[in-house]
Length: 69
Image (cartoon, rainbow, N blue to C red; front, top):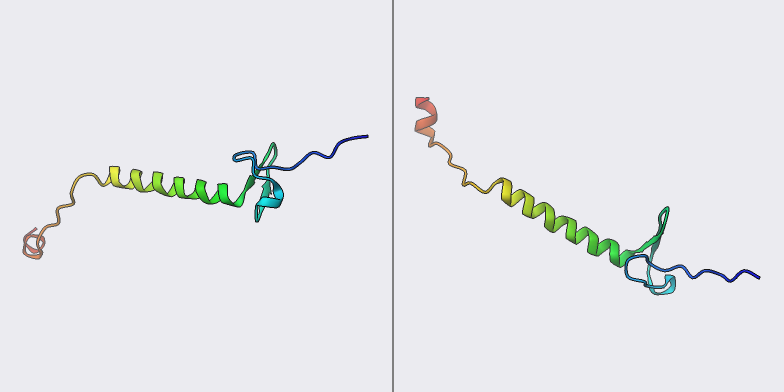
């Protein structure tokens, strides 16, 4: 007789009964809390990229300088 395989989050090991949502992928599962944490990490990385690309201060000409140009 085959034993039923327990479904757990592939990242944190949380059991299906401990998660609000457990999303199935091709080779594993991810719980809602790990998705939230991953989303936060991605947001932080994007913020860092944005800050590094804007690194130099933006200098805007004054209206009189624009008109003169």
